[in-house]
Image 1 (tube, helix red, strand yellow):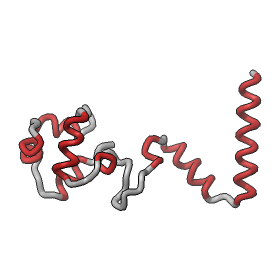
Image 2 (tube, helix red, strand yellow):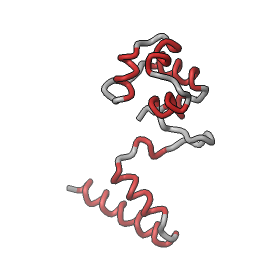
Image 3 (cartoon, one colour):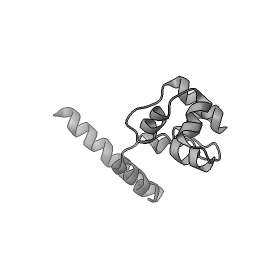
Length: 110
């Protein structure tokens, strides 16, 4: 989720150096990088300031060009379905949408 390790290494910082820059501990940085805990909003902002990026970029919601990545909250299956849908022709997209509506309506009646 949070891209701390990659950005930290790109900047040539150790965990200890990063922790000193943002007023945290090396252990916290380690836990965040291993995704065993998450930084508070205060530290997410401090990390973004230190790295010179947006909090959305840091959280993986935005790419290098400032485009928000709406797929960040999707499961792998949802990403695959969205990718397949985007490859369909417009007529096929309309058919897929109609089928989904049919399934939703049928499930609502049960």
